[in-house]
Length: 85
Image 1 (spheres, rainbow, N blue to C red):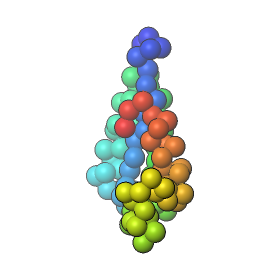
Image 2 (image 1 turned 90 degrees about the vertical axis):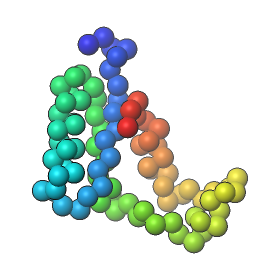
Image 3 (image 1 turned 30 degrees about the vertical axis):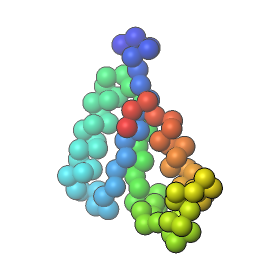
């Protein structure tokens, strides 16, 4: 595969059970992407202790120019690093 067609892919999984269908699908997707020559980063939100609920401060600043994004800086970096999601 030409270098310009290779992508850096971010696969996000969010399921607490490793024997779940979600994890089986994640493994299949990752294998297919790697087989096609793409680089793959997998982020498991449960293993990262990602909190999906907004804090009161996050909600209060959500629409302001000074949104408090400190607690999700790492996730923002992951999302920006991938060529596909």
